[in-house]
Image (cartoon, rainbow, N blue to C red; front, side, top):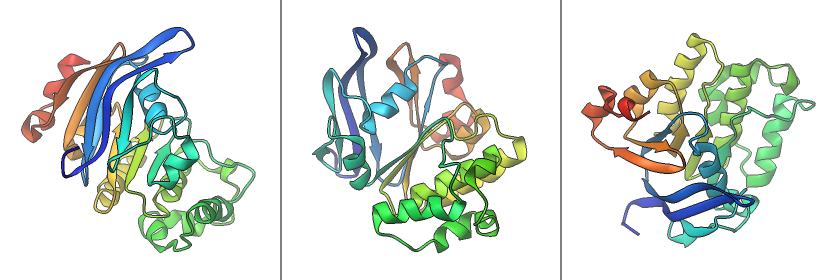
Amino acid sequence: MSQNSLLEVNELYVNYGKLAVLFDISLKINTSEVVFLVGRNGAGKTTLFRTIAGFLEPREGEVTFKGDVISGMGAYKIARKGVKYIHQDKSVFGDLTIKENLELSSYATGDYDWEPVFAMFPKLKILLDRKAGKLSGGEKQMLLMGMAIIGKPDLVMMDEPTEGLAPHVIQDLAVSFKEISKTTTLFIVEQNLPIIADIADRVYCMREGKIIVEEGCREDIQDLCFEKHL
């Protein structure tokens, strides 16, 4: 494992039952990077994230985090080690208030300092007593991101965080990504190319369950040179 490598995926194969979905996936995320994973629907991006986060077990290969093998460890144990995963469906505890959702994250991590959350998402403080099920899509994404940074995780993975949101909300979230990246490494599945061009340190492209391209040149990322592989 290289000195600044935080997460490494090595020769990973994943099945759903007898159906092979991921093939020989290898990648790494370095500390303090913002890395994006791109590809068409069905490419295997969510499956890869679910495997890293411990919701799926690989058929072959392994995932290491801070030098420790975490593949097959179980999602809650991986989260405790400092990997937070925000699912694509923007699921929150809808019958609970924003405050109660935040309290759940605090209980799990032992971190009850919400000031960094409110500094990044002041609207959450205003809506603290609102039921999470009544929030807009953008407000739910803010809540999920706020919950994720409680406990100061080393790595936050987000699956399609801007999907279905209004352009002005997406712009606000892009600012939040930059702010979170000052203290936390980010690994993001995203389709919004302008955001990727603006903040990505590296980009991995997936197709049919395989990593086909890694782009690490900032100029090429800004010029969207990777787009031809999508």
